[in-house]
Amino acid sequence: MKFFIDTANVDAIRRAHERGMVDGVTTNPTLVAREGRDFRELVEEIASFVKGPISLEVVSEDADGMIREARELNSWIDNAAIKVPMTWEGLKAVRVLSQEGIQTNVTLCFSANQALLAAKAGATFVSPFIGRLDDVGHTGMQLVADVVQIFANYDFDTEVIVASIRHPLHVYEAAMIGADIATIPPAVLDKMVNHPLTDVGIRRFLADWEKVRAASGK
Ligand code: E4P
Figure 1: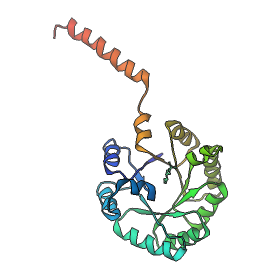
Figure 2 (figure 1 turned 90 degrees about the vertical axis):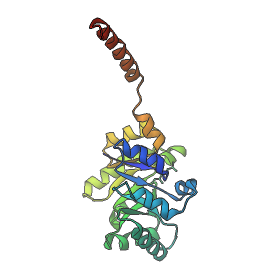
Figure 3 (figure 1 turned 120 degrees about the vertical axis):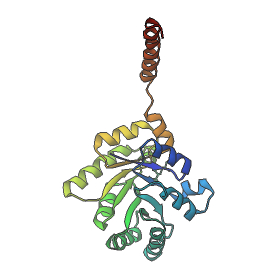
Figure 4 (figure 1 turned 135 degrees about the vertical axis):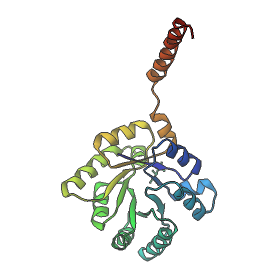
């Protein structure tokens, strides 16, 4: 399972990268706005140490505008994946971009049929938004299960990025389903390593090791 980091914060990406947990990065306009920095500079800084796909989102609403923006974003770095919204215009743009060999990530996916359309358009990635579905009373993870099954049925190459992850249980469930990728907010990644029994175990081993040292007189 690949782990992408769901943030535009360079310090957080670097921390996860140093822990060996960054196979890629996803950003969106909201995450970029939070950083209050020049977009291109920010992207180039992330790409200076992240070699996996870095998702950068277009903001045009028509296919021609999306394609223009995508080509520009793709020229900034070697490993861009262009995030395109799940609309007919977005799908038209995805078809053209995939024929040009530009990686695409169809975002704001909330149904299995939307994911199917993205795969047929030739998307590199599709991003079902789990947390936002949970927020409105649906079972977000069921969508992931459905999309993984559909893509397996027809051997689509499009990879599933589980997005809008809110807590470690989402990552666990995505992994049980066999999703290709989870894009994980830094705070959720931090929590994944924790278990109270690990902490208790370390304290107990260290205390017992003190007894070994005392017995050997060192
Ligand atoms: C990533 O590609 C998405 O933009 C992100 O996971 C959305 O997360 P949110 O629903 O918490 O804003």
